[in-house]
Length: 255
Image (tube, rainbow, N blue to C red; front, side, top):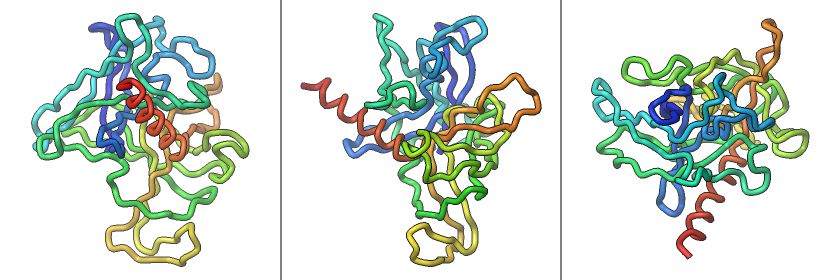
């Protein structure tokens, strides 16, 4: 499930965001968040996002313990090497135009930390249509209490099948999200009868069904306080392509 992360330059806090884990087929963990969170720059313009121009040199990842009443383990993840070169892996084709990056991380095993990679959660191919609800799981207020994420509801505001190349690379969701939710996983969560995308009819699941949609990267920025409050979600297939690129990069480093 999601993790609260903070971007730092030295000891200077630049801002909070969200990330999540992905268990890879090479038995390593990827920490996934937005390119703009890791780089401190707008992924379209390249301009710094912090008002004073601060660029992160590391992320601090808050990893909850099994006893969530205890303070979390804070893991430092460098974003650049000693020469200032990025340590993340981005999309192999679209690069920073896809606002997703992967960091390889070493974390305590599940019995020592309360972690759950997103792809370890059982999912079903729930039907995706414009207007259907989605949930953005993140930390708009930072880490509060025992560190559980906020579930912010939104809905598909563009046809999901038009993303990833047919119209644009991202999906559009209707949601009034807040700073701190960048890097949040986006899921469908349905209770009772579940209508599947593959045409096999409907099934009933006692605790409902879940489907991973992608990663959220914030609202479209406008100067109008009454704007439509639309946000971008980079679909799951792009997340998987970034993870595949991370595994390939690891093999190349070892050669």
